[in-house]
Amino acid sequence: MIDSTVLITGANRGIGLELCAQFAADGWQVIACCRNPDSAKALQALGERYPGIEVQALEVTDYARVDELAKRLEGRPIDILLSNAGIYGPKGVAFGKVDPAAWREVLEVNTIAPLMLVQAFVSHLAASRQKLVAVISSKVGSIADNRSGGSYLYRSSKTAVNQVVKSLSIDLAGRGIAVISLHPGWVQTDMGGPDAEIDTAESVAGLKSILQSAGSAQSGRFLEYNGKQIPW
Image 1: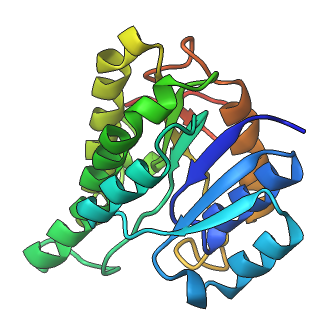
Image 2: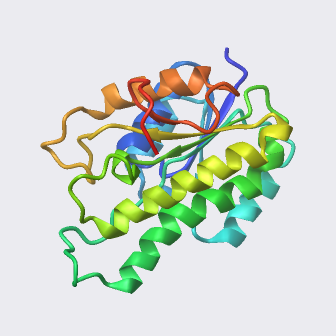
């Protein structure tokens, strides 16, 4: 039995659900967080299959609830804090049609919430062996890779969270905590669509390989699921 724990947000579907499955299959303790556990039938079924999965209700933008969960889990080391919850926002929004309210919502979930999560759980991380924070970002957040424009809401939120990751990697280094940003690939999920290049199993297998071995040498990097480094 592996005596390691991973906390995963957005655990009820897509990449988050597959991350729970693969980590649990490897013998990890998994704290699987989602907004509505009662309606998360696939996650509940997974929890029945793997006793190491513990389902917790969490809305990542309700910061009082985030702090409450951190307090309930006080004293429990968390080896990997994996911020996976995210939203795309309205699709096909062209220049001149951007809704600032929708943009703020995307930024709240994708950029602000990951930082607040780390602030709440930093002591749990510091008490663990691996001490790793990982944020599921996206290659579209790479400024150097932007050759098509558009996607203002989602693209900017991922660029911004990459900057959060970089700053955290510096600020938390003294506590031995590594922080990385991950691109899962173009994945066949509700967000990625059916025409995406890879399925969740392939994406998560690559992500898990990185996550289980990452440490201070990888801190502050932006990595693709296949291990390649992406320019900021």
